[in-house]
Image (cartoon, rainbow, N blue to C red; front, side, top):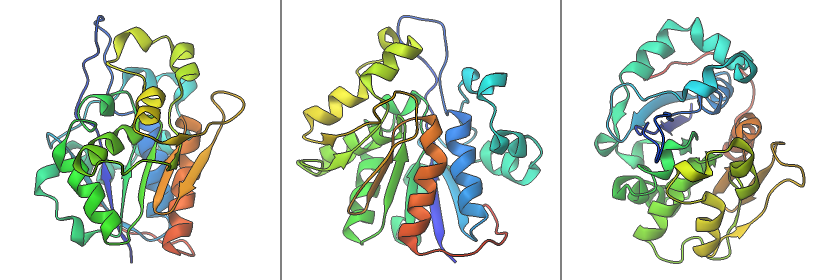
Length: 236
């Protein structure tokens, strides 16, 4: 049974606006249930611990996925989500992989968290996968601070500058993720058509481009872990 750590943002403020961000719900629930249904034991963590904020836009009807509806009826997961472990209490050696969902929040807290950076480096050094989707790859920025040139030449993806313009939040964030990853030397790739699913795999790094890539990113992680079949497991 594989033990997976899912690290969620604790950040909800945005710049130059009263609008809020946080976890993009489907980018958490899609991978969570993919992993759960493949027999994984899942632990939830966040920089601040406790209940992470959810981006209000991800609750809108057009953004509700089947996994979001499942979450609404899942009292076990709701209880775990309300009491995530504080990230600095996590022992990386206890986990087989880590997954970072998006929402714009990681641009602030996970990107600047030394704890997140060390966690990623420790897992990679142990030969364990690191997966992230949309703005979740911002956590790799903290890893690059911990280990310079970590991302040099790495084939990655994430929420693109074009997609940022499409959602009209570019003036409310501290930087554009695609630009920053390129500055750190990443070999950045994306789908030809914005807002369509796209996943990149480079060694132990698995990255997904946008919300529609969340499930496929989890599938790539499942395949890398060599997990087969479906059965029910628990959330810590």
